[in-house]
Length: 261
Image (spheres, rainbow, N blue to C red):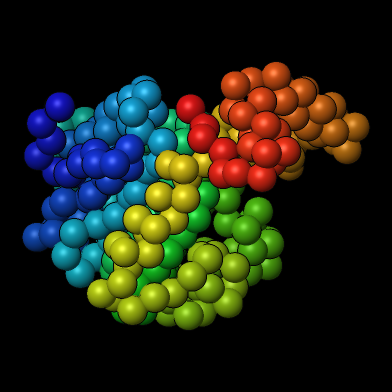
């Protein structure tokens, strides 16, 4: 397996866990970490033994956003340096968002800036009680990245997105759940247990079905009604003809649990 310096990648029981691992820098994104995150996402997507992916952080922070010191020190200059980091982060997010494998984000602590953006792009998001969420970009004269301007309006609507981005309001984990940004809040000590329980459900389920759900939801905002329904027809027909679809139907008729490939 590829050796990483700023993240950890562990695969066990068909579950891949990617961990941001710069706790001494609040898991701030420098070029190395953004690049390694993107590479790890690609490896997880390409690994046929992986059926679910967990993303989390080490230490007190999930991710404090971009590493401002690293951006300022870039030999390319501040603007190109920031873009270089953002491009690598976006490569990883795009890979995970379009992967057939569900992504569970386990928010272990503060998620700020690009950390906030990355936290809420998951298919399911569970947060520790101590977690906090803030955009923070305009505090340092920057603008959002990491898919925030795509996912936040879809999750919580334009008005709430504007409030978060313009005011940098800090949300507790409970508030983030109330706003519809995350699925569940749990005691800190139970965070990874819950994330792995969810991942185990995906491991036992149909990857083809899960992948189709992700594809349909990503397409829904851009498509009109008839276009989206045609995509639904194509997807369900394709899945009905697949080994997983045939096994699912056979198991239902036989009143047994399906054994998906």
